[in-house]
Image (cartoon, rainbow, N blue to C red; front, top):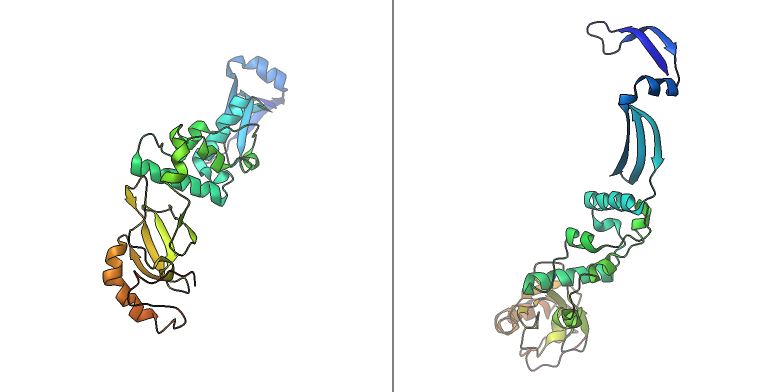
Length: 261
């Protein structure tokens, strides 16, 4: 600390020069300028939680004491989640799919199925004893999402947006809800004899079928199976029966038994 009596700065220079000063102490500085003393809570996110009670003399920081109050820590953590996104939480595959399925029902059916965007999840998240960035990775994003399930409608969640659909071959194939419409990727041979396009959301939304070759490569996309069998299948059959001769490519796929291979 210095008590400065004389200082100047030459024109064009960014730094000044002290001409006359004496040593001082913090206590003397505080007594000399009590109007400049401030104390405030600094709660923010700077790549991690910053939650401190800061005492200043003008622009000089005298002390910074960590804040342990839950409300301060929660405010900083929420600021971090808003700034960097909910990927800071722990998201396993099931949690991601749950959020996608609920988002689909919100788009398709509306009330009572709520939005599951970031702000909706932040409104219900329980941060528990989380105190820093690393603690957020212990919070399950899927469990936070499920807090938004509306009751009693939640009892029909799996029926309205099933995670898997059974196809004629007996396979239970996972539905992809990540895009604007539900998609069922399935091999052509597994849906022989299937005349009706599957539907979800209480029958309101048709599932788009991504029909695959025996090697699992896309061959056709349809939201109308009946039309595909009439117009699309003959082309697929002509293209693939020579490439995959060990697999069945019947002329009439509606009467042929489905097969997993």
